[in-house]
Image 1 (cartoon, rainbow, N blue to C red):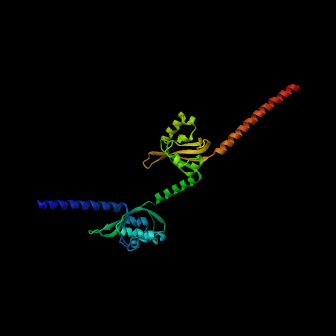
Image 2 (cartoon, helix red, strand yellow):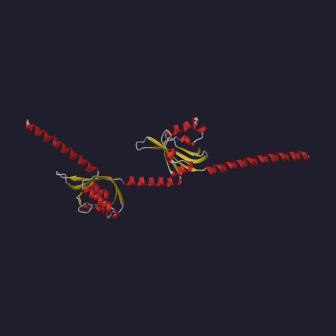
Image 3 (cartoon, rainbow, N blue to C red):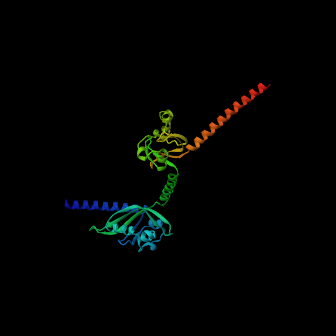
Length: 290
């Protein structure tokens, strides 16, 4: 009976070891893996790591980890603290900028895992990584474009029900509100009552909730009740799962231009009416002379 119990435990242990070996093999096939001693010297690097970084095995084994880092970072106290934490058994993960064999920067989504012996002492560090350089570059470019827009345009974000989530300083300056005054309030705050209570306005938000894009010139109202004209676009935004999650509005103040156009139109109308009256008077004068 006792022998059968031992046999069962051994079988379970063998199964566990086999499962762990299978898992490690799967990780080794799909990820870049490299191992370091506690001084940061490379002990092992798999083919995925060598391919990702552009090295041959003999160029990596026995070399220090800092050869993959930018020189300024490798000399920094931050880098020293990074390895101090790893030696103490602390797990580190994140997106790290590193340098490939050709000298070009590369971004790795990685985890540094201190490995311990049976006594609980840290004996080495295993790093698992994925190349996310293209993703980081695209995100950086997108962020740069958004920052450029933020500098020159008014930007405001809404939930799908029209409640305000956030607004940049340009937009706040434009409408005269503080962010605290706007958060949680509805978009209709910027609209004249006749529009806010109309079926046209309800239809506007219904179509935004269906993912429809709007752009054009919109009449709005500032905090002091002043009329504002905005050249704006309303952009439905989707989350990573493809679900509509919010609406972002980019706007420029064109009030002065619209008012000038209206004045010019009014002047043209007045000139037309004067011209008509002048023509009638001239015609009447002609009749009198005749």
